[in-house]
Amino acid sequence: MHTIFNQERNGDIDKLRKHFGPSDRDVIKEWIQQLGPYRFTGTLNFSRIITPKQAWEHCGTFVRRFHKRTLHRRWAMKGIAPHGGVVIMEVAPLDARRTAIPMVPHFHFLLRDHPSLARSDHDAISSMNAALQSIAGNLKDENERAVCDSSSKLNGFKIVSTPEHLSSYLAKQVHYAEWKASSNVKLICGTGVG
Image 1 (cartoon, rainbow, N blue to C red):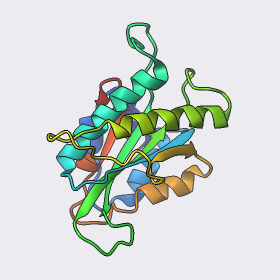
Image 2: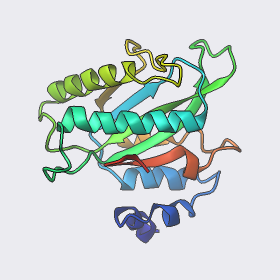
Image 3: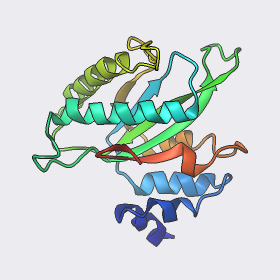
């Protein structure tokens, strides 16, 4: 099984995803752990009803802008590697009391450490959250309306303290019949998510 996980590092994500079915929670948890170690976890929630396709488009935009904000402009031309990690899309009611439907996508990020980030946990989190709030507030739909509440306490980054519990938490929707790794789990890359 370990060779499956090494395929990600070689860029063969499609072959990797074929190994996951809708009920492979333990496999997904192991895969998430194998791609670590992670230093940060983050969440990006939407304040409007959007489709999963629109959510992934906004997530890709978010990641590209996050690279620019935290790695600085022209980071790729300077030979700086992008942030590495995983993005998991989940669905939950837009209503925080969980009484309303429809279900709306949101994202959980797991990011590895990066040499461009501060060594101090507090300083790294502060700069990442400042970037997240700025970027989230500028994600717009086709009518130029904000799709994220940039002041939401639900959005933000923090330090990963218990990786094994976190991977279990992030794999909690694997048992849903409509859940598929190919459409709910993506890797963070230089061009966004893929």
